[in-house]
Each structure stands twice: as structure tokens, then as C-alpha cells.
Length: 274
Length: 258
Image 1 (spheres, rainbow over the protein chains, first blue to last red):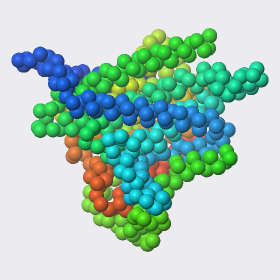
Image 2 (spheres, each protein chain N blue to C red; image 1 turned 180 degrees about the vertical axis):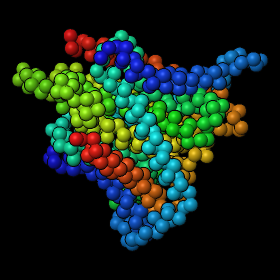
Image 3 (cartoon, rainbow over the protein chains, first blue to last red; image 1 turned 90 degrees about the horizontal axis):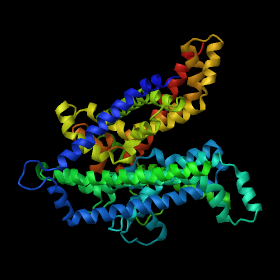
């Protein structure tokens, strides 16, 4: 197939993405700037940086996204490498992927059902639990994300581990390498790039997702998307530029992070196959 | 030991949903009862008598089905090109296709709101369908591309050499090999569309009522059993979708295969 017919096949989706995503990002930036007023063009960003709720939201969002994605990655990695052979059987694989079929907000309700002060865990333990699910530590939100994201990590890592050449691990062991060294040199060069990419996808997703903190979050500090949604509709659209400015910042940070991580992953990939 | 660990794992992944179902058919099961004491269909009756529920189910299924069809129409040609052809600028194209998972879709939706209003598709299912394409397309591309990677172009050429026409080659070689990927992409797309609250709320303006828009106000209501029943509904819809997909595709398979 020629590259001209390839471009023809790509055209509809490419056009949609560029028009839609491009227009969305362009308008968001435009509405976050102030034109023709007495103040400078960046006045909304200045207001944002002076806002205590913004910094609190940024802090708690980065904390929740970081903890959730790292814990999910570690648990998912351990499960995948322990059960690679078991997951060759479809039934087990589907069972591990099951939470992916459940919407995020239903998962949030599940966490509430089990870990609320008078939830089922409390019944089993015979004593009321402290209200940690909906607290400023965002424990409930993090638990929900872990339950939802571990299957995603397994989904991403399983193909790598199923194609892994285990003879390398055997060689490494017979040369006297310890468990960690074997993992580091026989598995990580293959699994590492996918693992890092998966963590990136989760981190960016959690930074910008409303669904779970919208249910289990607290009013202060709110997570960034919850605050943005609030501002977007507050007092007759007057806070809209602030909401746009905040999400533009999240977008910029996500893009820079993605560029850094993905270029690092690609470099690493070239090195490991060289 | 390994077996035990595996069972524990499955318990954590699958048991909660069964628990949800049990909760929905109990009369009143609360602290400190470890096991339910009385069963009742009360919660399901309450849910069924909610006048907005049935129209919302219809709207959710309609939007989900259209989003799946559009995903396949846009995704199949693009995934085919990415998988089979090496061309200049491939990395750039891939990056553009993955943009919706590299930036928050919420930012794009907020930016598009005014444009959607101007185009007259805000507060309308059409706008909601378009915005649901963003979080779904990157995954469709990824899954379908994996499918095309397994479909060797040489097999299609072999079919041609043996004298099969384009239609027959697609029906007897491409479709059977691609079937699992097509199904995964469709189910994933449907589930993602089913799970959208904030995008639907912004672009639909509260006037396009899908199930998640009803779920959020329900969440803080006192009746736990009703929320549990509502939650079970969300787990049942993807299964229903899968069933319809399998039925339709096996019927189509019988028609296509000579």
C-alpha cells in the first residue's frame, strides 16, 4: 500500500482530531485571556495564582494522581508477573479485567459501601470506622482509582510479559543474579517503557477527571477538575475565564510531562534494542 | 499459596459487584448486620417507578451505539494505515491520535462549549456524541491497530491470487481475524461512553439526560438499596451490549460466509 493511500485512510480521523481538539484548546486559551480591558491580558492567570483554593487544589490533585498511579502500577506489575501463565486462560484474564467494565462513579459507590463509617467492613469488624473515605486525605478517591486502574495496568503489561523471553531471566539467574537484578536486567528493559507510559496515562487522566472526586471529594481542598466545574457554572458564567485558565494550565503541564516522558521512553527503547 | 492469592485477587475484583446485587435485593441491610436479614424487590420497584429512568436508558443506549459506530468508521481505516504502512510523519500522526489521553478532555470540552452553542449542537445528543468520541477514539485506535498487526497483508494477497474478490477476502480473511479486536474496541468504547458524567453535563447542558446524570443526584439520597440497584444497572448494560454485538455479528457472519 502506498503512503498516499495511507494518508487517504488517515484523513477523516486526522481532520476530526485536529479540528475538534485544536478548536477546543484554542478557544480555551482564548477565553482564559482578557482582551481590551484595563488590566493586562493575563489578569485571570494572576487572579488564579493569588487564589488559595487553586494552590490547595493543585496540591491535592498532584498528590492523589501520583499516589494512585504509582500504587496501581506497582500492584499491577506484581500481579502481572506473578500470574502471567494463569492469565493465559481467558477466564482468569477476564476476571482481572472485570473492574474496567464498571463506570468510575459506581466504583466510588462500592468503596463507600465497604469503607464508609457504617459500611460493610465496619459490620465485619464489629466497630464503626473513622470517616476516612470522604476526608481531606482523599483516601476513598485513591482507593477507587487503584481498584479501577490495576486492571488497566494488567491490560497494558500482559502482552509484554506474554512475549517476554524467559530464557534471559534464566541466564541471569544462572549467572548468579539476585531477584532484583534479574528483574532489572531481564524484564525491565522490555516492561519499563510500557510501565512508564501506563503511569503517565493514569497520572494525566486522574489530574483531569471529575467523576470520582465529584462524589467522594471534599469541598476544601477540592481537586482541580471539581473546582474548574464549579467555577465554570458559578454566578452566571463570571468565573468562567478562571476555570478556563486553570484547565489551560493543567493541559500545558500534561503536554510538557507527556513530551518529556514519551521522548525518554523512545530513547530508552532505541537503546535497549540497539 | 499462589492459588490462594489468585482467589483473593478475584474476590477483590469481582466480589464487590456481586455484593452490590445482593445489596439491591435486601430490605434493609445496614450496620451492624454482616449478612442481610430480609429480602425484597422494593429497591428495584422504586428504581423502575422513577419516570426519568426509562428515557435515560434509551438515550444512553442511543448515544453509546452511535459513538461505537462512529469509532469503528473513523478508527478502522486509520488503524489499518498505521499498522500496514510505513510513511513519513507517522509519529506525529500517532501523537495527534493520542492527544485526547495526553491532555484532560475536560479542558477541551470547556473550550468547545461556546463553539457547540454557535453550531446549535450544545444541549443536543449530537454534541454529546461528538464529545464522547474524544475519550474513546485513542483506545479504539490502539486496540484495532493491534488487530491489524496480527492480520498479515500477505494473507489478503493470497486470497487475491486464489481468485477471491475484495468482498470475499474481507469476509473470509479479514473479519474473522479482526473479530476479537473489533469486539474489544466496541465494548471498551461503549463502557467509556456509558461512564461519562462531566462531558455530558457540560455539552448536554443538563438537557441530554443520560443515566450518569440521574446517578449523581441519587448518590446522596438516603436509600442505599436503590443506589445499589442503579449501580447494578450500569454493570448490566455492557453485558447487554456484548450480547447484542455477538448476536448481530454471528448473524452477519452467517450471511457473509458463502
